[in-house]
Amino acid sequence: MSEPILVARHLVKTYPQRGGLFGLGQQKVKALDDVSIELNAGETLAVVGESGSGKSTLARCLLQLLPLDSGEVQFQGHDLAKLTGKELRAVRRDLQMVFQDPFASLNPRMRVGEIIGEGLLIHDIGNAAEQQRKVAHMIKRVGLSESDFQKYPHEFSGGQRQRIGIARALVLEPKVVVCDEPVSALDVSIQAQILLLLRELQQEMQLSYLFITHDLRVVRHIADQVAVMYKGRVVEQGDVDSLYQAPQQEYTRNLLNAIPGRRQLAGLATQANQVQVDN
Amino acid sequence: MTALLRMEELTVVPVKSPQRKLVNQVSFVLESGKTTCVVGESGSGKSLTALSVMGLLSEQLQRTHGRVIFQGRDLASLSTEEIRGIRGKQIGMIFQEPMTSLNPVLKVGYQIGESLTEHLGLRGKALRARVGSLLEQVGIPAERADSYPDELSGGQRQRVMIAMSIACEPAMLIADEPTTALDVTVQAQILKLLDELKTRMNMGMLFITHDFGVVADIADDVVVMFRGEIVESGPVADVLGNPQHPYTRALLDCVPDADGKKPLKPIDYAWLTNGVDP
Image: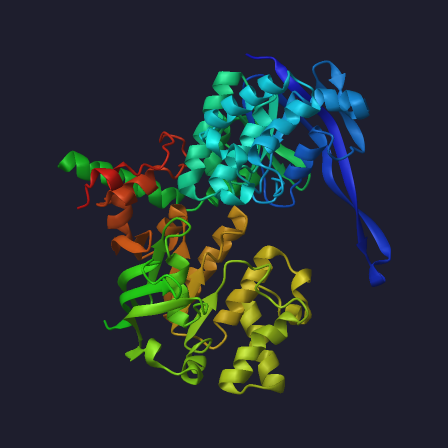
C-alpha cells in the first residue's frame, strides 16, 4: 500500500449568500462540511458529485486558491492552510492544476511557449536555454510540435488547448496534480486521447492525481480511489472496484443508475459477441 | 406508415466558399412516434442539419441542394410567413443551452405562453390554465409560471424549454443536445420525460447528441455523421450492436463504459487513409 501524499482533514468552507427581502439578509451556504480525504502517492483519487456538491470548491481549497474556514491540508510536512505568500508559492511548484475550460484558462495574449514556460520563470528553474529545452520536451510529450511554440491559444482546438494546459502543469515536474473536469468540455473521441495521455504521464512522472468529475464512466477508467460528494459532504469513499460493484449509499446507487445507456449498451455488447460467435 | 419528415440529399455550404460542403447529401426519414438520433463529433454537421429543418440557418450559410419534406410539404419552398406558421406549432425545438436560451427579463410563464397566443390565440384565464398544465406535465409546480429564469435550476430551465416546445402539441420535436449541460441524474430524468411525452403525443423526435449512452437509452433509429456526411444509419440495435462502418466502430470504441471492462482507445482514423470504405 502506498503512502498518502496529500491529506485533508475536516475541511470547512462556507459562502455567504444574499437572500430575503431585497437581498438584504445573509445566509451561509456550507460548500464543504467537514470533508476529509487522502490521496495516495502515485494513485488517482476521483471526486464525483453533481453540480453544487462542492467538488470544485474542494479542489480550490486544497491548493489554497480559496481560503479555508477551518481544517488542515498536509502536504510534504507542511500544513498548507497555515502557509502564506512566499512559502505557499514555493510549495505550489509540486502542486499543480489542470482546469476545466480549455478556452478560458489560457491567456489569449501569450504565445504557447510563454504560457508553458511561465512556471519555470516564476520558480526560477534553470537558465534560459534549459527552460527552452524543458518546454520543448514537454510540448512534444503532450503531442504537439515545436513549431506550435510561436502560436496563440486561439489557433488550437479544444483538445489541443487541453494538452497545452497539461503541459503547463507538468513542466514543473509536480508531485500532485489537481484536474478539475479536464475532459468534460471535450468530444468523446478527444476525451479518450486526453485520458490516455494523463495516464501515461502519471506512470512516467510518478504523479498523483486528484481528479474532479461528474462523469462516472470516466471515473471507472482513470481512478484508483473514489470519493462521492453530496451537498458539501463526502457520503462514500472507497476503491473504485468495490464502490462500483457494491455501493453502500442510496445516493451512490442513484448516481450509478443514472449513467446513460448502461444496461442497454451492456446488452448490445453481449448481443454483438453472440453474433461474432455465431459467425 | 408514412414518413413525418423526409430529408432528401440536403447540402449546406458557406455562401463565401461554396466548395466546402458542411452538410453533404444527407438523407433520412423520421416517422411519427419514433426517435431518430443524429450522432457525431463537433463539426460533423449534426446541428446544421437540425437548423435546416427549421429554416434557421444563418445568413452566411446556404442550402444548395436537397429537400426537407415535412408532412408532405417541402419546407424549403415555403415563404417566411408560411414557415413561421409551422415553427413552434407543428415543429418544436429544444436548444442545447438552458442557461442562455431563455429570456432573463421575462417570466417563464409568459415565455411558454407566447407561442400559444401566437398560434392558437389563447389569452387570459385559458392561457394561464394551459401554461400551468404544461408546467405540471414537465414536473414543475404551476405557481412557478411567475418565476424568472434565474430563479430556476439548470434542470428546471431545461424543463421549461421542453414545456415551451411542446406547448402547441407539435407533430415533431427537434432536440439539439438537450441534456449535455446537465448532471447525470437530471439528464436521466429529462430523457425519461422526453420519451414519455413522445409516446403520449405520438411525436416524431429528432435528437442530436454526441453521447452513445444517451443514444442507447432513447433512440429507435440512429444516423452517424462524419464531416458533413452520413456514414451509417439504421435501427439502434444494428448500429450499436453490429456497426458496419469503421468510423462508427472507432467512435463506439472510445466511449468509456461504466463497468471498466473495455480498454480505453483513442479515436482511430486509420480507415480514412487506408481507403477501406465499405
